[in-house]
Image 1: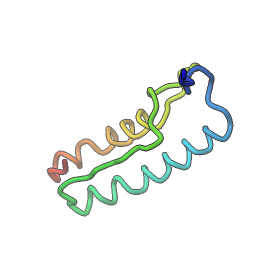
Image 2: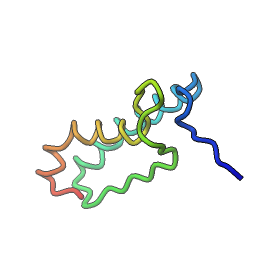
Image 3: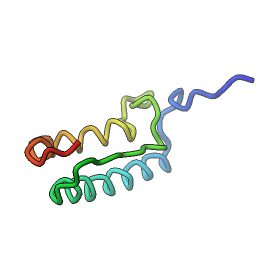
Length: 81
């Protein structure tokens, strides 16, 4: 049985909506955990795909990494893993 490549098509409107909600959630919570000196933050992305769709729209793993990059200084200062 062959499997369907989910990145073979551009993201549809519902996927874009899900990604936007996921991004807002991540944007709100990562700095909250970092600023509270949480020693270790684990992000489980059960939506993860290859990173980008066929039109180079960022998926959830790329969006998470972009948010982490925004707080890299605080992450290192607070010694958060």
